[in-house]
Length: 639
Image 1 (cartoon, helix red, strand yellow):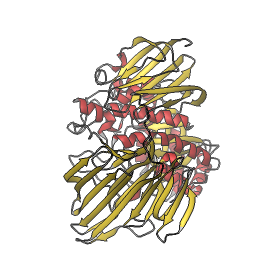
Image 2 (cartoon, one colour):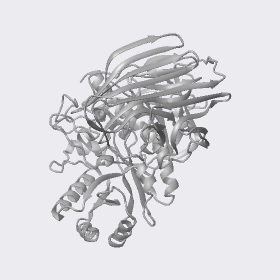
Image 3 (cartoon, helix red, strand yellow):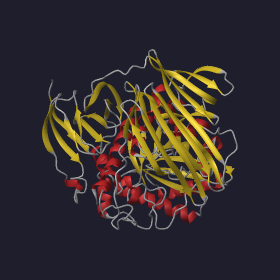
Image 4 (cartoon, one colour):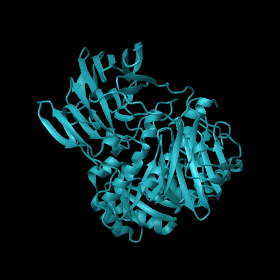
């Protein structure tokens, strides 16, 4: 396995962003979009890009040619041609991006449909950082009318701003940022409900019919202009190349109960080695899906397989039950099977198999028929579906929703950006359902199905299924998992269900190994790096999570745990760079375990070695690229 595969799950690294300046603006160009447009370290926009999405809402990656760039000290010019191809669908456009010394950025798109095709969206998307939530904004509409309003503080289920020509809001005292749009009617949605850390302004409005057929030869032209207004003189700030992680011992949360999803390979039960490695994680629960519209024998077999796996790893069962058209009969069959098999049941979630949500009549019927079984509901899809439908869960034991970081983009940086929104989603669910347990999951790197396109994905022979991400077996996957658990704890989630038990959706590889080793190059019978994250938290349910704040959360995050056995600090480096980390609030002797490219492929992971170090507030730790570090404080001293 190459270093790049271990880091990213792929053979080659992502493109290194190009740093640009436009007057007081500093920004990055990552080869397909502008990112982190900021002044004095404050983001004016998180990203600007041109999206081409087909009738199934698939975002088609561009093929970039004819690239030109002129980079100055406080200005730049970029030109290129982009082409998007999907079967018979072909769309080509020319880009011109300029940044000028007067703190002005202009991004133009001139495009043409090369074939007849159906599209759901073609055009610019501007991402406003989630930090603007609650801030005043001036909206200029296409009829030139002006609306004074605010970015939503609570996650908005529907578009807060429509019919937009320009948005203007304060960046800092005496400085405002203007974002103007031409060539289409734009509107804004709250992407936090899909766990994206942004509000997105896009065209075409969703109130218009889609998909739309574009005949060959149809030309499109759009422009986005971002400009600072006011005191735009650049302010110099001192930079420290070390990341500081502060631990606030006065702010305490509970670690969620952690679980995994049962293996879908019912024909092959866990081997003794697999069961032992999963049992070492001391998981709270195992989730399994039951489709009640299937035959009674199929339901019974699925329940038996889930029960066997849960007992093998010492976990309780969370059943996600999908009810078809004959709900009463199906629930009565389930009741009889539960009485017969007596699985170690903790929760039973009920969803409609067509809408992926819980109709109120289904919850009432389930509680009547299932009696003493703890019943939960919500959605088997994103938080947005819970936020929009807000099912009546009166008397339910739990409310649930799912998270995936790749609804809109797939790069590492975007996945890391989503992590703080896990806390926001959990807090918002708690506001909707204050008396229910908040259960988040499954949490997966890629979507398990596409609810916007009617359900399951199609799989191309010889290619990875659309639900599989090679980062599942990477060090980055471990870092992202730690970040998710940290933020779910801080958001007040009661339980979190991740990934699966084994294979390319799981935390360890099967004895047989990857079915497509060239595309998912895992080692047979190995544990994936993210297994170590769960092992580091084994037996910690109920431990106190202390609030941590990273000075560079897109580079490094940390989780601090306080329990009867002492203090543990878990650190994760999200980047391909070596990073120095300071822990000013920890002082004393500690054992150190480091997972990096040198230790991630241990044949006996249970025997991973630890070293003893002295921690001092001013002495930084060095984290290798994508490293995961576990510090256990042996003896803490007062600085």
